[in-house]
Length: 299
Image (cartoon, rainbow, N blue to C red; front, side, top):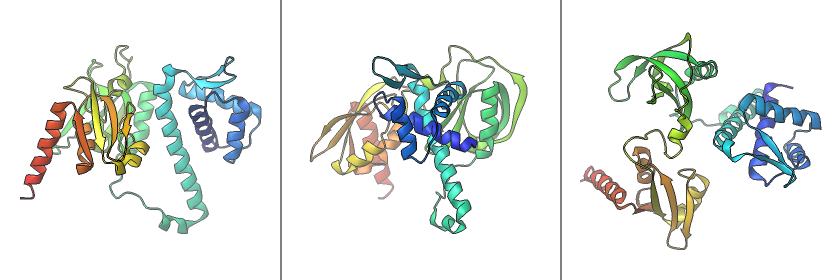
């Protein structure tokens, strides 16, 4: 058994529990078999234990429902873990296919703008695991000015295919964000630190799209999309808080409960004439002004 085999089983087990209502053991086992994995009961039980020990996710059996579930308090950890394991599984399957047929590479297309900075990913993961301070040179996105930083790492965050390090200076309570693609000369110091208990970086980004969190409080955002956009918005929600409001031949309307920020505006603007901000009024005005400014570029 390879580590990749185990990771694929973990992903399938978690996906089955996430998508089903209290599946029992036999349902989980059958789901593995349907996906080409036949394992005995003891191996699957051991997978439950490994998921708990390695990732801190408890798979709990409900005597009342006669099936397994993940506690609500762990959902914040669970969702990104499942996505991460699914990415690893997909990458492994592609690699396995490529080793069997080199010609397949001509049938797989990667984005030309694919993320950079992956060489920093593993060292930062190790620093997070060992709670070690990191130092690096960072190039700002504005003028490529380079500065030296010493950072206490708290979180590795992915957004739109790019990875970001979230950390503090001198272990203070304010968190800063650094793109891995702009980090160079990364060094893991032989100095450990203790996390500040009042800082929960996942909580910091829970109510935001992307990385910007300063300047506003959480608000209810109502967006009305062209009905042709409904399938896209359903399959790729703008935020985990997205909820359905209305769907008819004229519009597909959703509600978000988020902190309005730059990334939210970018998401809205990318839909152009296919979306309208219904509320709040101030955000509708800002989007209208941005579109008017864009139009000026073509006069």
